[in-house]
Length: 249
Ligand code: GLP
Image 1: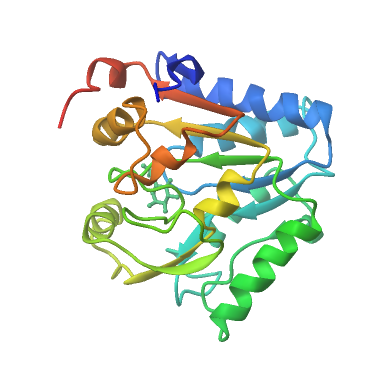
Image 2: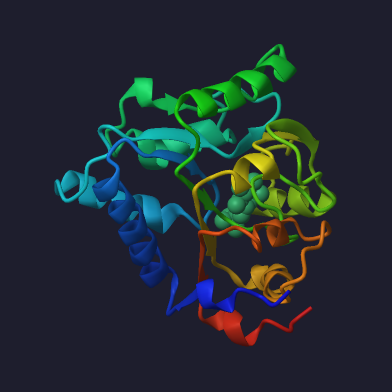
């Protein structure tokens, strides 16, 4: 199989990438105002969220009817914990964009019955009509959501043991302020690839190896991002500097 390089759009920098990603979201909302989204956390989507919030404030875009899920969170953290992805999304996007509470369903990392939470989450996505657009970031080890290397590609929402690489990266990002949980909860790869459309955002030098694995065109469980290779409606936006770094190891 050859890599679907035609779906990779190389962007000058993170700002251009964020604008193009926001155009993508706006185009979907214009076609389908009640679209269902799965949203990522991390540094990568911050520019996209800022752009969407600015467009919503300027009444150039409305998220009033859209519905939002998130991709992942740490296990055991309440929604108001400073590390919680639910909190991050509320602060960075959902609240400032004015999304109504009844249109938000985020993973409950501190659910007592975690298996029931995983089942309920899948049921909520199904009840919303399935995901129209899954927006993904990329882990340095190729993870999407918290689907770490070696993940079962047929899995739906489940609990995962976080890899050492992921936990070390996150310790650095939080400047060691918080202990990083050992486990996460994530929508599975089967949930992600069932989305009608996928937008993968790739920003940051540490992503070169994972992007190279994707560009090799070979599905490989060691690189979860390669599960996207066969998706019929995938767009990859990547920083141009990663184009020349693709062979880096
Ligand atoms: C975390 C999240 C992912 C995210 C990735 C990339 O591990 N679980 O959902 O896509 O990091 O983060 P960043 O955008 O900060 O590079």
